[in-house]
Image 1: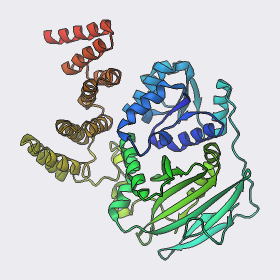
Image 2: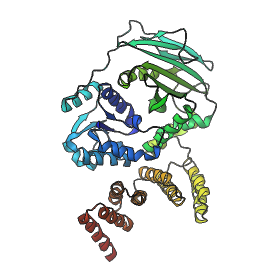
Image 3: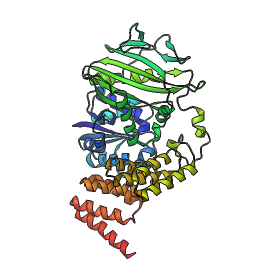
Image 4: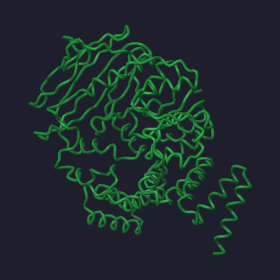
Amino acid sequence: MWDVFISYKSKNVDTARSIADRLISSGLSVWFAEYQILLAKRHRFQEAIDHGIRKSKYGIALTNDDYANSDYCGLEIKQLLQHCGPGRIFEIMIPEEPLTLQKYAQLHTAMRHLYTGNLDKTLQFIAEKTGWRILPGWESIAEPVAKTFTGDCLGKPYHIDVSGWKMLERSFHGGGPCYVRQVEGNEIYWNLQYGEEFSPQVYEARFTLAQQNDRALYNTLLDYANHYFKDLMSGWRVFGIHLFFLMNSSHFAVTYTNQNIWKRRYSIILIHPQTGKAAEFLFTFEVEGNFKRYCRLTRIMDDLVKSLNWGDSIQGLPESLHKDKLNKPSQRDDRLSRVIDDQPLANKLNAEGLGYAKQGRLQEAIDTWKKVLDYSTLIELRGAVLFNLGRAYEKLGDEENALRCYKDSGETNPAQFNALCNIGSIYIKKGEYQVALDYLLAAVERNSQDYLTLNNLVVCYEKLGNYLEAEHWRNKQQDMKKI
């Protein structure tokens, strides 16, 4: 069903999307999360991924130590090794780091390639190994004189590189400048709207997107997309949700279509360094044609948006909101670098949450524990709080949120093995024994002496008909009783 499945960490999404779009524009069938997991049925995220891997002929994994440390990516690469085999997996190293091979030794026999920033070279490597005909990238014609559009936003100038574009008098979208360009016989339009973002909560939340693990991050993007397109006219449908980085800050874009017209809208929030005011810049691109043609032109869209500059601003929170940006303690997790640090308050809130939980006031415990995550970068505390949130949601019968919190817990603090064990228990109850087994094996790697994990492994292997492995883990249980 799919020619290839692409596995990646969110920090490498720009490269993953560039590969996906080039392959799609070349006529290949690509399973890429940003085009597959959309606004509806997001609770079936893992099911969709599992199905995509099982139905893919090849796998592409964009690896590094961050990839190897991700539980979600670990599940994907294990399934790719099982269903595609290492001989049909491309390991694209960004950069070459040791942990992936240490954890997944089968990749020694995969098709390994070091990514140096040259996308054409990487795609050529893939084409040579597969026999696929991958179209070359579009050739841009250098302008003899660079052109810049300068406008005014909140009393300060913003600049966009419009070399190769022609300005239109009327906008197809309304408000702001509008431009058109001819590319390989196709006209591509873009329009810009902008205005002040008054709510600090909005832009603080947007700038901390990259601190979330990949699954929570994507759920947040889906929520934003729902908000932006709740009034979308009938006949249009959302086709892709995209994470977009500008100078290490996270933004997003949405692809939507009415069959023969394709649009991509980027939502970019910048903070002006002199005034401290926040502004949202909305770029809307439009092109006619099919999906393959659209994917061939997305690089042009990205390049235009990346040229945006507002008063030489540095995209990110005002300095007052991230005082710890410089001279951070070496043990701090970079994903949490902008969380407000108030450890005494975090400890107090955690204790209050535990008190509510003991009284059976689970919703109050959940609301209190969520606040802890705003005030502590301590990995051990965050892992424990996320685990307790998972238990509270599970007791309330909310398995979707329970799974999300358990997964976040295990990824935040690898020592929190019991989060993986509880995920396995939930999937056992669902009857999804293979999925449960992957999590339980990850849990036993972290703690081989947990009786509940060993018991659940026995259950999974028996349900899967692998009685030899079931007996192996049952014997380990018996050995533990003797200790």
